[in-house]
Length: 430
Image (cartoon, rainbow, N blue to C red):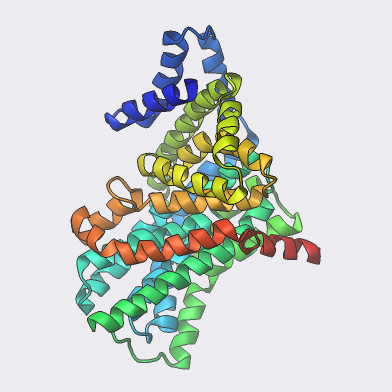
């Protein structure tokens, strides 16, 4: 009963348009007061503070700042040029280039919104000029931008590692195959659409000299995830320290090597990163307070008993798990949604003896889909703004792309080795 009341109150407040931070705190304090639970408000305050104290969360603002550096520098343009040289000759070539550009940029940003904004401003004008409908260009960008959440430097992976205690080293590799599978599925849709519509039959193949020039230009940016993930796996630095390395490397590439940023722009980028980080940290703290109430009132235990009655087999639990995450993600951004859902679902997954790395990838993949699900998807709004098109027009072109990602999510969900094989293989080499 408490679980239904708690989530009912939260969704009613959130759907009324109240900011997420206030909705979380109002739900926590309101439930304690009106249901007479007797917990002092000091406990809410302490759980809020405790939610943002872990050292690993220091990496969040650093990764956000690194993403700002790369998004506003010339990294995106060079990655798009590199992808165009490699894949522009395929049917639906510009669509394929969009997907691969988002995948590669996601490997250095870790943020779906940054990925969508940085790549979209470069590819959407070219796609429209080629004859793609604005709705399709925006829909493709909104979907492809979320691949960043499954790439090694994913910020949601960092948050999940903090909540679950799973090694960030394992998570950094676990999402790579699902991310590549998502990219391949979207590329197949682009090739089908290019042939069907006749708007893009591909360009001429690039020469060897063009390929070398594009590789040389994009190489320093593409080396960033290799250096950081290599450092984490070899133990040279921790995930938190890797965020600082990402900032230093981003400054070096954008300021010194490419020269696309000036020192005068750094204060504004720091301010942007500070505002984003402060918002994320406040929500993390408020979610920590709600998670404390959920824990102390044994809501997870009650839900566990209910799931045992309803989901008697692991596949049934995974189905309910996916549905709940998709519904939750429609209304809440991935980070707070993960912070809210993980304390509830992880004990249930452990009851079925599931791999926590696998569960982390499943959670992230579902919340990525929610980012472009109408009517309130984050990347959906960014893509709509860049393409200057309405959400309704985008939705008409969204379905084949969404179907492709659903297939990948089902594969990730019901074939655990798809996400756990690579980290285990790399560990076996050490």
